[in-house]
Image 1: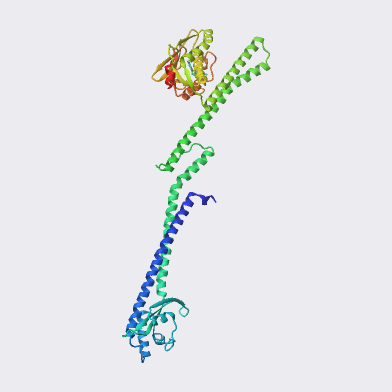
Image 2: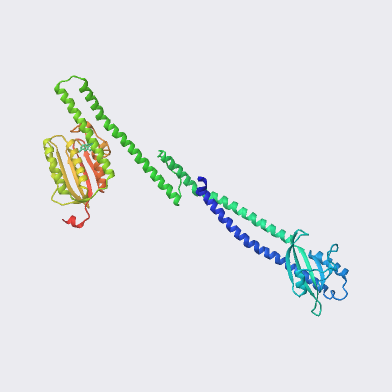
Length: 476
Ligand code: ADP
């Protein structure tokens, strides 16, 4: 069933229908013109013969008529004109007939064309003759003597078989030409349809394979037309889908791996607590370990939730004065830093830089950077937060005097779950998602984030955000 709905089938069917219609119209006009031409040619020839005969017998049809002579004459003329020739007198009495045996000699010929000829008109008609089982043409012309009196008529009758044979041959040729045209157009349209629908078929197969889960698809088809562009877009889509899916798979595997570690530790700890007698102090240590593993899990789940929220939500931007915003954040971290023996410095200068941002997400960025500086800077260290303007961007810098990041890891620290080394961290290492979240949020704000760091000397994280375009806001 589907076959008949295919473009290939329909295109061929339409082409064939069109060419059939064109050929029928052409054949109709050509044939009717040729038929008219051959018929008029034939009747003209017959008319000439009839008049020739009439001239010949003029003056011989009155008074004493010599039927034998006239019949001989009719026979001679019949041979030349391929028609039966009959002479009648002015009353319609046959006085000469080329048909010698079974002819009409001495009988009255009652025939319409002859009646008209005896009135002085030339006339012809076509009728079916049972005798010859064919259409015949009958023609009669008046015979006028030297005084202009109608003395009789010449009556000719001939078979149309010859003309019909020619017309039949023409019809056959036209039919063959139509068949040939249909074969050529049919073949051509199948070829063209295949050329056009071939790539579509390939596309369908590739899409089917993708739907079955085989995402690694590529179509080799280069052409500037619509189908070529479709194939190109398909390849781009397949590449992206493949990339996103493998990323997603990797992410899911990473998440499972990250969750498994604290869960395994927790299982071991609970088993030990359940199965072994232990001192109160030791029990407390075990419970503390359990607690911190639980906290790690909760932090991980929170970060994962944050990441998935980032992918889903469309952010509501508003104008944020970065100086005020950063001062608030620094204020909230002061106590925690001081308790760990760290100095948190504010280098915000007295300037107002306004950016379009989602405050809640921007807060997340600053918190993640300050948490990291806190985590990776030993006691006695310093962390400085600065705010500057460069061109039409605001640059937030969080600089610490901590352990720094090895050169070879710098390219990876913004990737999900990447951690340099757990042992270096103040609180036993985070989730490895903090900087990935920072990067995602900043990208959503149309900004950039990067890092400069030297091991043992410290790190400098920088965030660039486009300044607000609202002239009223930037002036204030
Ligand atoms: P985590 O939750 O482990 O801190 P992040 O994505 O925030 O994850 O950071 C990724 C890794 O980058 C960290 O594990 C750490 O090794 C390194 N890192 C991030 N910030 C700093 C910093 N200020 N100093 C040194 N290393 C850092």
